[in-house]
Length: 245
Ligand SMILES: C[S@@+](CC[C@H](N)C(=O)[O-])C[C@H]1O[C@@H](n2cnc3c(N)ncnc32)[C@H](O)[C@@H]1O
Image (cartoon, rainbow, N blue to C red):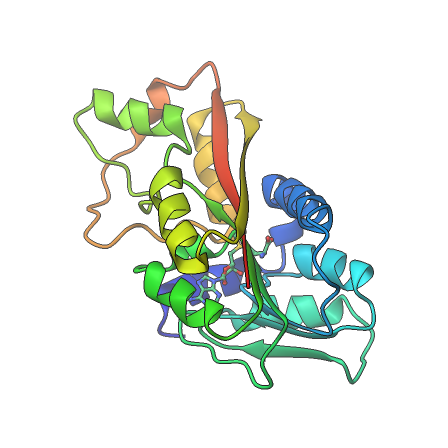
């Protein structure tokens, strides 16, 4: 598999749900948030970056009769997701790159949880997907996440290998313009306590989210870990967005 992001997530698919506690919590909260918006029930939903199906299963439980097309870049993730459902003609699972996916027939909703932070550039993909649906709803990891990990690198004059994530206010303005003001949004913060820096680094590797940003030169992490011997509170800043027509 030549896409390194797909390769890492595929490799992690078998253990993902044992370690993805924050993603499970975020999916649960996003599902509840979306439900309380009171949108008309969808007959057809497409999901981008379904992973093993944490959000897909919640979505299906809320809209059991809706046609649901779950997609992901990583083949093993798609297979895990598929395995979570009994075979049914209105459920479809496909491997595809969500940046360029085009769904036919046009879904009422396009949804995604904790995936769009991998899209660079993000805005053209949001524009394309919003032009192909009535509702574009997603959760996304935001700038400001992993403060302690970043600060430990900065004290050493380093930049961590983490991908840059979108800034909430900038994304909010872009989504507001894209939807002509017809949008809902909220931001939440979830924290996972780790006994040390190695445990935090392992947790990203365990879910497959450890592909470093382009141009990152790996460096010895021991001086980073030394700053976290008392533990690290890994904060996940997460944006919920729902653009509708
Ligand atoms: C952190 S996981 C989230 C999975 C799931 N939505 C959840 O909430 O648990 C990110 C997922 O995005 C997928 N992904 C990353 N880049 C993608 C792309 N360009 N197109 C589709 N999926 C992508 C990964 O394979 C992975 O399954």
